[in-house]
Image (cartoon, rainbow, N blue to C red; front, side, top):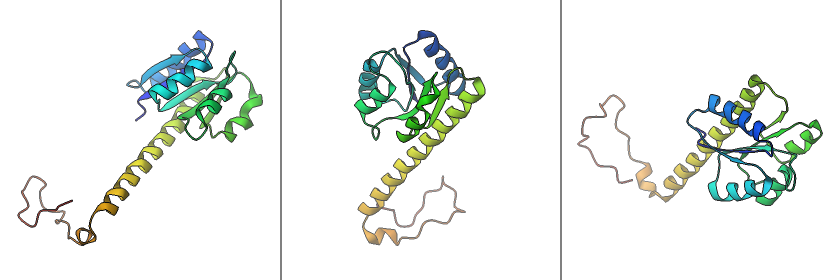
Length: 166
């Protein structure tokens, strides 16, 4: 589940519109906003959002300069938002999950949000799988050979067989 969302746009009305759409898709997500690229860099470093909806063209540090400052490999899941289609190819070079061209409708936003959610879920699953692999690697090999209790036993019953020492 996506918990933290950062909306970056120099236009307050655009931020409000995106916030409204995020609340429809993820009512429990915590939202923060940044009105320029410098604040966005600070917030990404300090708050570690799960998803960033990032305007490309802003005065001062633009969206691509934000990505460069953070580093593309360290950027959270990013949906680029802009009124200009000239940046689309560059957006995919930096692995943006989607590219919303203003003005966009609710359906188009929902599709972008679904892509972001899918990427977040895949990333979370990969993190858990790596954690499990590390636990298994740290477990003595003889523990791997133990037989699991039969699935038919009730989980509320106390198993009187050997206690697992994982």
